[in-house]
Amino acid sequence: MTTTTSTRTRPSRLLLIGVLVAALVAATVATTTAVAGRADGAIGQDASGGGWGNGGGNGNGNGGRDIDEQAVLRTLFQWSEGYDENEPELMRDAFTQDARFVYSSPAFTEPLVFEGIDAVMKLFTDSLAAQNDQRRHVDTNSQVHEVDRRTVQVTTYLTLLVVADPAGSPFLQSTGVYRDTLVLERDGQWRIKERNLTLDTAA
Image 1 (cartoon, rainbow, N blue to C red):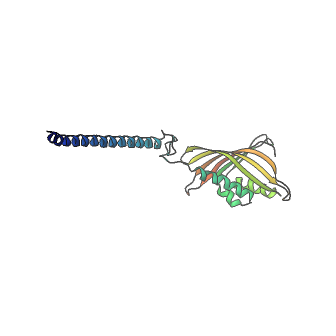
Image 2 (tube, rainbow, N blue to C red):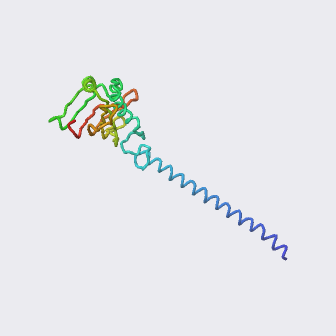
Image 3 (cartoon, helix red, strand yellow):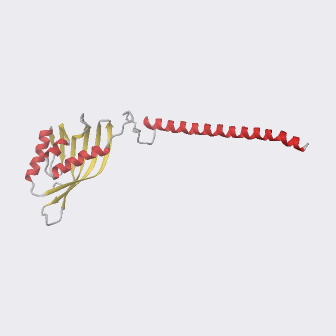
């Protein structure tokens, strides 16, 4: 009797184990599918502007493209280098052909406005010709704000240092704020379309 009972019980136990294993596998597959579905949904939401990520989630309808902020800032730094190193072509290449420069200072009752690349470049080259010192334009605290996928507005703090005597120390000439509008041109280069410079002092 004992042998017969043991023989009959073993298949039942094996059947029960098989059922439990199948249930565990099914539960695991269901959980994995649900997690993957939630991840896909989060990615889809991110790309459409409804998520927290950087995959175009700016709500501007730019098809999921992000602005390359470093490329934007390189243009601003390019202009500063061009001026400080007296390289007019670097400065010119940082601006569009229809560039506009608005220059405000406590020294002026009204802002000075320069229209077109030639007028803007004449301001820069005339200023350089009148200098007998070394200028260093230090650009900091830049904030890039996207207007659309080909236009940005950037606010940057300016600290203008001057070296009048190479044997001496640089001194602070002025501080101010750049408010720039840049556009992405057909050659893939960001360029300044309009620059508003407001100095804090009359220098």
